[in-house]
Structures are given as structure tokens and as C-alpha cells.
Image 1 (cartoon, rainbow, N blue to C red):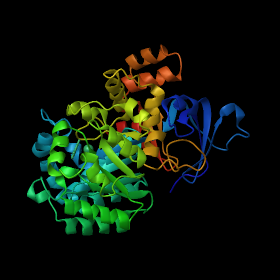
Image 2 (cartoon, protein in one colour; image 1 turned 120 degrees about the horizontal axis):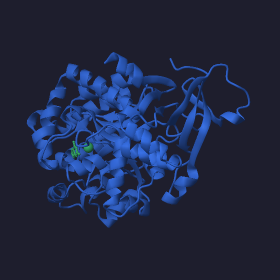
Image 3 (cartoon, rainbow, N blue to C red; image 1 turned 135 degrees about the vertical axis):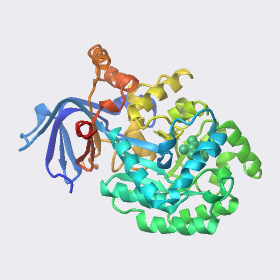
Image 4 (cartoon, helix red, strand yellow; image 1 turned 90 degrees about the vertical axis):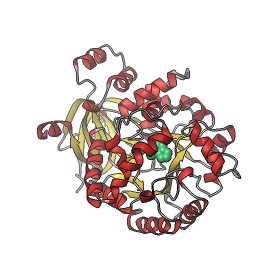
Length: 439
Ligand code: GUN
Ligand code: ZN
């Protein structure tokens, strides 16, 4: 049960509104050095400066010294790839065949899926991630297990079973009819149940026949409020392969677009090699991109252009893309995003980085009316950060002049040690010190 009438005293940082250009981000930022967050029945009631509180709360959780930010939103992650992070030496297409498909084959076992779901959710919480858009495997039981585990902690999660019917090992393939029927049953069982939502999850164009894509299209028409989650334009060989598999289409995105799979709740991971008309299509359809810096660097896929995404007015969120990505930790992921920017003469500010990881990510997932900041009525999902947990961090923090420099140091030197507590729906579901005691 969510706690009622909780008051927490700490420092707070969030963004009050959506930004449509980078210049607007600073204007939306809010930092309250000594503040109080009021919660009731899992919702935010208000955030006030301590000095302006009309009356003192009857009980208070005193976290002075900590910095509380909205829970991190991971807009692209594969839970069944947790056990294969750091697979050596290959780029996308051989990496999939050599490492990914064999690991995903194990998820025919409901027991394996349940054990890995529990492990996966613990990793998200230990890293301050309160909301995610998640790939399962082709097996419906993979998604059953994940949704069941997320429901037990009342987490806001969007997930779906992979749909694929070609160019993968036999044991991971299905027919379009089977894919339709199993996906439909999962939608009916899980979509809109508590804080869970369903995403249609065709893996990517190369593992989809035209008949499968037609089934995805049919499901989207039958269930217009479900999400669509796939990969797009990650690797040059992949892009060339799509063009040879679908020669009658005007490029990679057009394969999805002509099946009506673009739109407000469509999320395309990567988008590193888009053509001008593809950017325009993403903008016009209000589709969103998941920028996955550690994955893009690890697989040598390319450099995402944040500058271009602002110019073309396409929403983006940050994805860890485990297991091509190399960390569950959003602070470390933001640090890598900064380096991707540096290689393109783009200066990613701490304000912009934290925006994408919180309210911007919630906007990319069309969840900004429910999560992403401390506005009254929002669901109380947040993370309590320790600004410094090592001699080096303490030295560097003591040498930081303001909150902007502190946030930038957090994304440069921070990691899971900085995540003190993770709260979901008004309840602390993870505490670093409890976890330490148990280990
Ligand atoms: N493209 C198709 N499948 C995958 C996957 O599992 N990971 C990544 N990074 N790209 C993909
Ligand atoms: Zn991915």
C-alpha cells in the first residue's frame, strides 16, 4: 500500500514543463536547496521551499544533504540481454547472431524468465530508474514474468514480446498468425492493468516479413493506445540490408511508416543514419527516438546527433539498451552522451542531460502527464541521490560552484553508489544501505 501524508525534507531538482528547444530547458529548471516534498496515496501533493511552508508537517523524513530528482526514465532496454552485457568484438548483425539470439533462446523457460525479471528490476531500482520501455523475447512467457514482477512493486513499465518471423534461429521464429494471437492475448491481459502498458515490439525490419508487419499494423488499429517499440537505422550494414529486403520502400523508416507504425506512441531506438526525409517523417508523425550512447559506442554503430533532433523537432529519451549498452546507470549513460556530443562539437549541458533522463524521457514515452517531475498530482516516482560517495567525488563536489556544476560532476563521476534510495508510487522500494547489509 502507498504511504499517505509523507513529507520529505531535502534538496530538489526538476523541470516544470516540456521544452521544445534547448534554450527553454534552463527556464523550466527548478532547484530548491532546502525544500519539502509532500506525498499522499502515492501522488505528489506539492513541493515547497522549507521557509515558505504554511505549517509544519506532523511527521517528517529528514534527508537534508541529499538531492532528490524525478526517477530516471529508460526509453530502450532489453531485459533478456542482462546476462550478456559486454559481449566482445562484434558489431550489430554478427553480435545478434553470435551472442544475442542464443541468450534469448533460454526464455522459453518461465522459471528462467521469472528469475531474470526479478534480477533485472532490482538493477533498475538500484540505479534509480523508475520507468522503462522494455523488450522481452519472442516467448510470451518472457513478458508474463516481467509484468508480474513489475506489478508486485507497482512500477510504471511498458513492455512487449518480440515479434519476428525471419532471419533468426528457427527456435526464435513464429508465424505471423501466432505472433498476432500471442500478442493480442498479452495486450488483453496486461495493457492498462495498474501502471503497466503494452508495446507492440517487432524486433526490426530485417526480422519481419511483410505479412508480419501487416499483423503489427492490424494490432495497432485494433488497439490504438498501445505503444510501438522497435529499432531504426542503427548500423550502416543493417540499413543497406533493409533496402535490399524492402526495395519498393523509400528507405528504412518508410517500411514502418507505410504500415502505420509511426506516431505519438512510437519509439524508435538509435536513428543514427537517418536521411533528411526520415527526420521529417519522425517530426510530422510525432514519433520519438531513444538515444542509447553506451550501446552506440560499444557496438561502434555511430554518433547520434542531439543537435539534429532539436533542429528537426523530434522528441528524444535516453536508453541504456542493455545488453548492447554497458550500464544500467543513467548517470553514467549521461556521461557517455556528453562524450558523443563532444565528438560532434555539441556541448551537452547538465540541464539538458537531466531533462532527457526525466521529464523529456517521460514526454518521449507520452507519460509526461503522469511522471517526470514534482508537479502536484503526478505519481511519486523519484530518486534520492548522494552527491558524493568517494574521496574523489567529495573533493570535486567541494570544488563545484553551483547546482549545474554538481549535476555535471554527477554525470561525469557518478554511478550506482550515488543512488541512495529509489521511490515508486510514494514508497521507498530500494535503499542502498539495506542492500549493503544484505550482501
Ligand atoms: N536490432 C535488432 N535487435 C537488436 C538488439 O537486440 N539490440 C540492438 N542494439 N539492436 C538491435
Ligand atoms: Zn535495442
